[in-house]
Length: 588
Image (cartoon, rainbow, N blue to C red; front, side, top):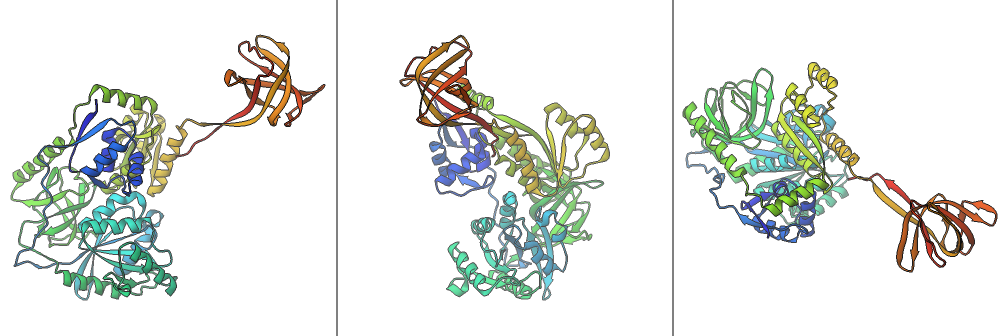
């Protein structure tokens, strides 16, 4: 009898794989075979999930829509008639190493890319710049494939996407993904053809053709996608790009009410020594002030400090302003909404309601006996790598964990013993000792006292500042846990013409090589007609006449000796097949 699993109208690929107890990579592959290109953190609708699950082999599961009061849909913030123009919020998106951060540096007149580990953006960053007396808010989203969650988050936060593509390199996988995220979010896309100091006119034309193939028809081709040639290195085309951003903003009429209670979204969240939980948030409506009470996801705060993203204290933040907030009771989640409320009680009650709703949403259906047997069977076949993950900010933690989930297979999988934001602590080391886990730190520090404790308790702590290096390290650990692949190579076949000796542990016989070349050392199996008589026999000697040899070619007569654990009754006309066997290390 099939087990019924309840899901919402939409479910992420990773969550569905977890509910089905299968590797996320297997589900992604099945989606791809059905024409759906999705990453582990992307959502698919109920109908798609139902079709895919029905086609998965060895999965006896029926999906049903969860009939419970879902969390209210995030309302589109409608501006009133008295609303005032606000700065546009622009996401810089594109493939890794195509120059998003360098272009933003050129716009800001700063140098950030050189300080980024590996030269790639490691988390979502927000800045405000002034152009022609008007403010523009920029979000710099990571381009590395591991940061799909942050890119999707960036697209949904914004009014406009600047898609940065290296003109000399063209469209790449993360470029296509960024186009998809922006299209799903329903935002306008401007293409910045970067690295024009190296690219030729022909390469620019080729890029425009690639854009047209991916649904962004350039104006030159009769479409409505603006393509602006720029060079972050030589700082050319920057003014034209900013002028176009403001022009599109004017056409789209981006407005917001400043006099309403402040509301917005969390971009990043992390722990800071001496300040506790810290959130970077984007104000979407109203004016946020220092001292305001806010409900922010499942936690709340009385804002102690309100700062710009460059660390300058401010008293208030109007719409489209990215701010740093301190005074939080707990660390909010990546993507949580915040809302200013009248007092601390209202903030606490609203946070408690959100926490309750999340707990209700996490409760699944009861596991049937057959489903429990399936899970036990899979866990018996599965070798798990226990790890603890600590990251600098909540967004990075989400991206690291989502990326590591995609490494799971039917044989090996990553098991997250615990995870969190902040420095590696003594408690993390104690947990690692108990679980036999490796501690992975991403952009976090390792205090000397913790390093000494880990060395004493023989706990491996590995700190990384570049995400793909962390993923590669976990991948190597998983590969080391894969059972080696046994490879057999057929060497040749001897047809028995005479038997000289049969004992309990040895056979000496002679015959004709009818196929291939016999070689030693080798293993052998004895076949009579199509029936297997004996297997895994050790060939000890080959002999031609009085001479011992190491190989005999096809068509030659020879003598053969092999050892066995039990008596093997070899008869004339039996076939003895010789083969070699070796083990090969497997990779993911």
